[in-house]
Length: 107
Image 1: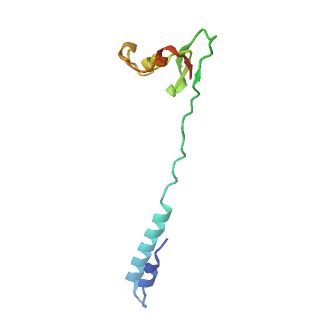
Image 2: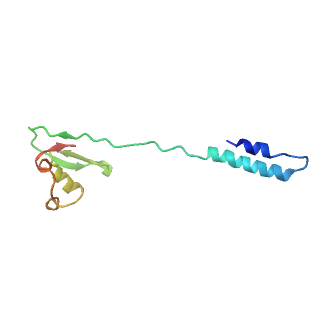
Image 3: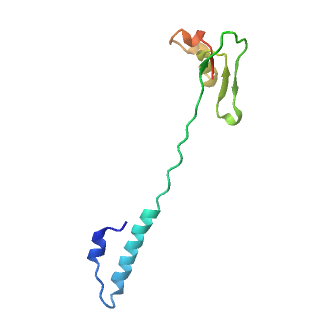
């Protein structure tokens, strides 16, 4: 929007083309500022379903998803997931709760 003070301060007289040119340039600047803003990108996020593995599950593993966008995890403890996904030897992961090594999860 063009501020109201702009229109009140510019007065034209016959043959005063320089002021007219300046006023038009300033007006075009204000119009371009209003239309030059881009729309924000659509927000996206990832969703993961994390569930305890059923007690009767026998097999499991970690598979990378096509395109490198994630992993499919079945019947694995959290410590093993960290070790494989972040390429850290399991012996270097210390501390944490017991369930990190004993509970198995599907992601």
